[in-house]
Image 1 (tube, rainbow, N blue to C red):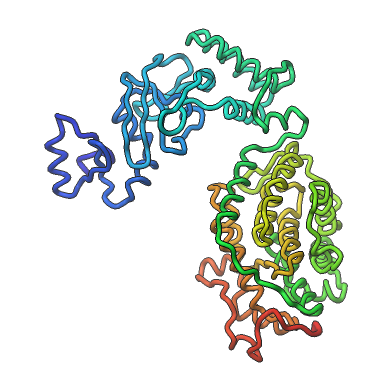
Image 2: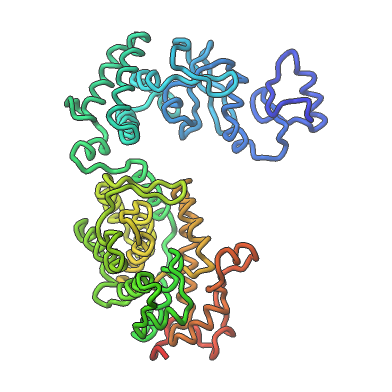
Length: 507
């Protein structure tokens, strides 16, 4: 066991001991008088990951306050704002600890970590109402718009009862801190949110809420981030599709087969073929069979599969009509109708039913900024999947909306084979939870290259190539045995022609 904790601050009392440990490579310096037993990890990552352990070493019993208390994390520029005995800044890798003098702890302030406290929620709002001007870096207190958005989020999660309890606490704290005017302004904001007052507010999200078409501001922030990443990429040559009608039908069959398999509607390949091409609906699974038929009919319909929205009303119409067509055999799922109850997948809660239309509208505004078909396609898929506007069929609808963008531009569609399911879901998870779409983008672009390389001229030929490139391997087997989807090689095709330019009859 180490004689030192993970992080230690050098003082007059321990400086000799610390120096000897550094010389013996048991400690390393990572900041001003700050040393750690972690000898390899990048300094910025290490400090940011352990910021709440490090802060009380410099400022014991300090109070996390202002913007930091509101956001519960360091600011974008690394600033961490505190109330402490002294006013000073401490610069560390990736972090700047900025302390100010202020009122000591009051009722409601709570322990955040050992020797570190945080202002109560009511105090946090009141103190953030005091304007501040940053001379370098981000402002100490939040803007009015940011405060309004935080209040809206609390109202969305806690309802009128919860926000009114906070309102009472704010009045009490404002009086205790000598900030009664700030507390009154907050009270007016809250009254406007719940419809009992009419204060002038600045947040677009709040304006949408007051107009009756609320949207999820955090989701819209995420969608803007996805947009910025997509638009920052270098232009790429499009993968143009030249499928004959027969090859396009074959590709549509496999797209519907794999798209349903991802969602748990599993059939053997020959069963799916009989269902789609021979109308053989199995008695024991009629609804599942109609799901795959509905998906195939939507994908293969020449009057629909390349339609893209020109307005928000078009967007809603296409979404609803495609979902209805996919899910028509499941009336209990209200096909083609936006959800009236909230839904989730595991730990992910999707956009609230009351905010579906508003969030889709804001997302559509972002969609309209794109000029590349592949960027529009990726964004459209993520928008629909992230909002999850229907009771069921959201994933299939999202992928059909994605591929319509590509078909409209005469580019190769994207199919997610069975073995690639984990890659696809991980990409979605990273985009949703971490705001990082890079994995999702790489996954979809590889899937498009893969589809472009498959010879779709006959079902048998495509099946052979898909099998040789591991497309049908179950994801859990692929994950366990490190079996990956790979691009076909010339020798994989029976006559070496390959590519998506072949055509001909289905069989």
